[in-house]
Amino acid sequence: MRPILHGDVAAAARALLAALPQDRDRLCTRLIQEAALADQYVGQTGNLHPLFGNGSLMAAAQNRRLADEPGFDDVQYCRCFELVLQHLIRFQISRTHN
Image (cartoon, rainbow, N blue to C red):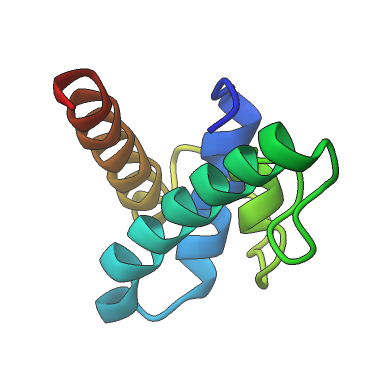
């Protein structure tokens, strides 16, 4: 996956916020997998992945409906933002241990 910036996390959190609460964990895993897959594709072909874009988490998230971005006074948005960060930590740990 391409380097992760604040905008990537915010876009993923907005995609999660637009999803049903019970679907958020699975969706977050899928977004990260799609971004990683697209990054591999770009590296191998030099072209954007036809479905998942350039390998950024933002591009993967933008394939879905995004909620308007609220402030951090929105508890649900904070939970979604936190969920994305938790998944990214697990993804980075698993990458360094493999």
